[in-house]
Length: 272
Image (cartoon, rainbow, N blue to C red; front, side, top):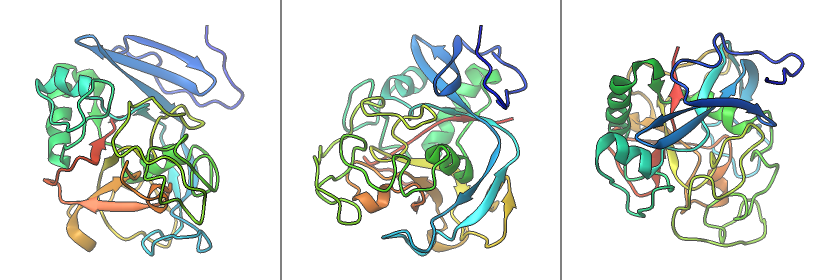
């Protein structure tokens, strides 16, 4: 039996046919699928409205983070970790990662590579309806109800985020610089049960990069083609070589869809 929290908005169907296991815990609802013995869990994010971007007074912000109101009218499922090397290898039969270990995130993958992976897995399990999260979904899930620079508050260190801890945010204390990626669940999750949305590897989003609108928006998906700076796909979250500034919830980056790097991975979501 599941404990129903007051005002909780359940998905239309729970559990779904693709789920190998499911439940509810202190972070909310979750479901998982298992493929060739490799398990990937997803967390349910309820619909809601939040302020995307950063306020003018946030230290070390960039000028492409115009704060604006976003409403996500539908709840969505998002993976609790980036795609692991184990899952990538089970689906694709190889491992492009530089820092090889099954429980580390797959890296050195382009946006195009992520689409090939998603297509392959959807062909194997069509009911999954996998995709990348939109940029708005990503930030909503990363913030987990917070309005501060990080989901943990106004500051981070290397006990929370895998980043270049010798280059802290906003005059913070220095901490460990591991100089490599770590396992996807090696560090604490945020308040919605999502691991390493800040640091470790940059994560591809579905959207093309575009400047934010000033007015409130509902369910933004980005433009149909690349425009604006770099004409790239959106990357979020920072990485193991990033300084603290670039691991903030509002920080945005972008890359060519064919671009790869040992700091880039991705996280799955589910479409409707």
